[in-house]
Figure 1 (tube, rainbow, N blue to C red):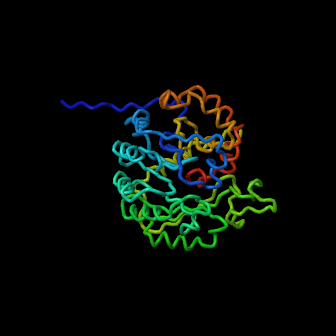
Figure 2 (cartoon, rainbow, N blue to C red):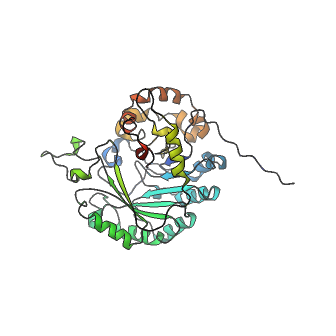
Figure 3 (cartoon, rainbow, N blue to C red):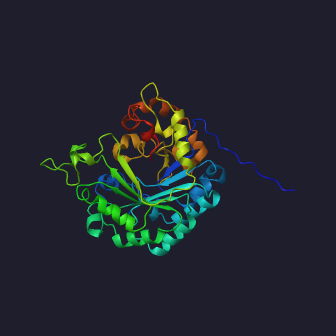
Length: 355
């Protein structure tokens, strides 16, 4: 007689949106982008990475069954430089093939064989974003310092035509804003599926410390290409008919948005919607999102760097249900990141359902 083991859902007393996780699997990177925190805040940078055993011990089959999306994107590093990244992807996709895996990378210094292995583990539910701000080595390295254009193009050519959706993702700068259409044309020529352009906030227009003595920021584009709303603006162009298959994450995101309302203090907590994903850094610490997980406000960030919130040391269920979060939810309206990113006047449907 065949018996079936019933899956057990873990305790979730704070109703965390377990459907989406944002994991910095590696804080290691080969690049030296000028406005990345690893360059701007080297004194608090910890280079580390999550291993396969972390995922097998923390993201058990019962946990994975509740997940619709995992976004691999680093605040400090790049996921492809985690030594066991391929094995981690293989494990996750074996447990739940329909999970959406999003990989955001600069794409440098990996050989074709590595990319072939990666796409052999991924399928039509998954996405790879190549972060490219130029059209050749000279232009791309103006911001993506120490990139390797030849290996990037090798990677793109290797993965295009396979099951995952492939995106060219660029940021608008002064040196590329008049060449965006050319970059889009290159993406089409390479057979990529989407072209994404981000308008950033990190320019002298918003932050005076980026301006030189004459009040100019060398990277700053024209005002029409600068985001002034406290977070980025983004435009996405579909280049082919390929779409991520059965992207349940989109509808799940919308359902959570419709069920979460503004607090009395005027905050619509995106961490309760799941838009950005519940954040785990490369040391195994859990934070509600990557915004409070950035090191620019180290006083706030360091409050989360305690053993009680380290998944390596306490396990995912204990961390998520720790009493620490009662005080956090009572006082998150006092945190600058929450006030600037999750203010009720900002959070409409589009804002709350876009990564």
